[in-house]
Length: 449
Image (cartoon, rainbow, N blue to C red; front, side, top):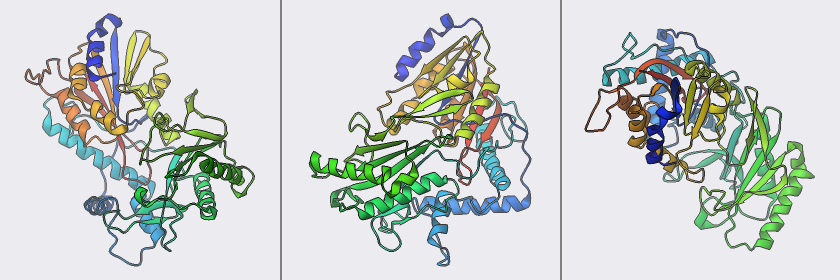
C-alpha cells in the first residue's frame, strides 16, 4: 500500500470507529512491563564515555573498529566490532543504553513545546527493559566466506576490515556471545564442506567463484533451517545440480548430519541480495518452514521472512505494546508496516478490529521500504486523522529519521506542511534491549492527544 493509499484509508477511519483507535508504527519492534530507571553512577558514566569514543572511531573507519594495540587477538577484534559491549556486565550495558535513549529524548524536548515530563526530558522514561536471554539469543545468523587470518579464502565467519581498505579478514565466530551453538556448528560444518569442494568461493563477483554466505535460522524447539547462497557464474544446470547433491549428502549422511538440519535451502544469486521472485529459494532437503510460538500464537517462518532475531525479546516487546495500547472491544487498531502481522496478532486479541497495513509489497527491498516508511505523507495522514488518539511508535533508530517523525507528530499545526491536526504529546518512553552486548536498543514511545 502506498502512502497515498494510507491517507485515503485514514480518511474513512471515522466510519470504522465506535470508540477510539490506537495506531502503532514501526521500523523495528520491542518491549514489556517496566520500572523507572536510575541515573548512572560516575563509574558507569566513565565507561559509557569510553564506549562513545570507541563507537566514534568505528564510524570514521567504516565497519571496522580501530585497534591501536597489536596485543588484541583476532577474536577480540571481531567481538569488539560485532558485540562492542561484551566486556561489560549486563547491568552496565542496560544503563548505557538508558543514557543513550535519554539523550535522544532530550533532543526531542528541545524541538517541541508540548511535553509531559520533567528533568529535561519530554516524558517519563523507564529503565531499559532487559532481554530474558543474553547469551546465544539470536534465532538468525548469516556467516560470510572470505580469507581468514591464515589467508585461506574458504573461511566461514564474520569479517573485519573494508573492501576499500583492502584489509578484510574473516574470523571464526565461535566466541561471539550473541550467537547460539547450533549456528556456530552449522557454520563450522559448512566451512569443512566448501574446503573439500572443487569449486572456489565467491569473494568478489567479477573474480569468479561460487560458494557464498550461509544463513541459519532456528526456533526454540531446536528446528534448524540453513540457506546456502551460490553464484552460478557460467555453470550449466547439470553442474549446479551435482554440487547441490553433494551439499545434501554432506548434511544428511555425511559429517554435517550432526547438525540435524530440518530444512536445507539453496539460492543461486548473481547479486549481493536477490529476492525470491528473482531467484527462488530451492528446497533441497526437509520441510519448507519452521514454526515459532510467541505468546501463545504460532508463526510460520520461511527463508526470507522477517521475524525478530531475539524471540524472547519479541515477547517482551509484544507484551509491552499490549500494556500500552490497552485495546478493548470498542477499539480499532491500525498496525502500520505490519510485515507478517506478528504485533497485531499477538497484542490486539481483545480489540474489535485489527487492520494490518503493509506500505509496500514484501518483494521490495528494505531500502525502498524505508523510503516509503519515512514519506512525510504517512505522518501527515496520521497527524490529521483526529480519531487516532493514541499512538505507539517503535523505532530501532530513534535518533535518525524517526526523530523527524516525532517532531512532526508533536509540533504546532503548520499549514505550509499541511499538518493541521492537533499535535500529539509524548507521554511515556520505554527503551528495550533486543540485542545484548551490542550498542543497539529499541525505543518505544507512547503519544497521546
